[in-house]
Length: 270
Image (cartoon, rainbow, N blue to C red; front, side, top):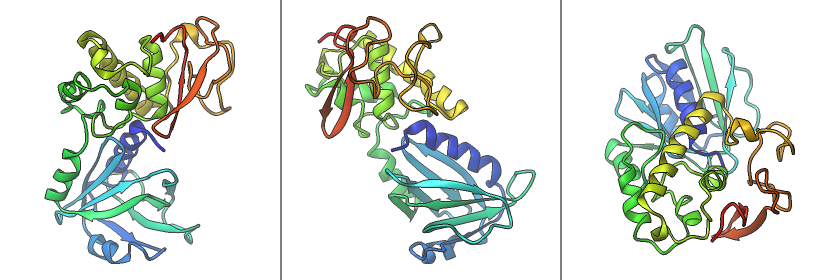
């Protein structure tokens, strides 16, 4: 599932290329046809993101809420756009503020729906602070973490506690701060939490700029290749059974609340 930096990167792109102008909206698949008709021909005022949720705000007061889930993806297209490929839930194109016409197809999202502002407020009220948002309040997350007996590895993935962090950022930021994912949230000090938060802010901003999650410090970015040819190196994510880049201990794997968990038992002692 895409992590928060991907949605913020998409929001920036859509805001740059489509916002400020009239957009044409359709649903070749048909599942979003009635909603698309309400949006078609209106001005997209802005696009933004909160955690793993993308929001398109229109001059009519309507807001399109997209959650990509495991299989959703936006595909860029030149204009005029060709015949739809696959099951296209939503198609958009327009002049916007770009230097040339721009179009996108959305395929396979978990959620694609129209909300009104009060419903958007309800959605965001359920979410924890997003490290990529300027209005984020890390104290909100700390107030829950500092009182919880749940493992910090679980709390970081809970979107009600912290919005936008997924499996890669969870595994890597805990390694970077020598914190075991099994430690109870309430065992963390405020100093540890502040350092985790600030590191997430900086790492996720890099993800927005570059399009990939760069989590290994330059002095450690060597040796064993990444878990995939098209991905930057990681410290522990998807490296189970391999030696830790820092200490040589075997990277471990388990499952925590249904999600794969990776950590180094030496660098991240319980």
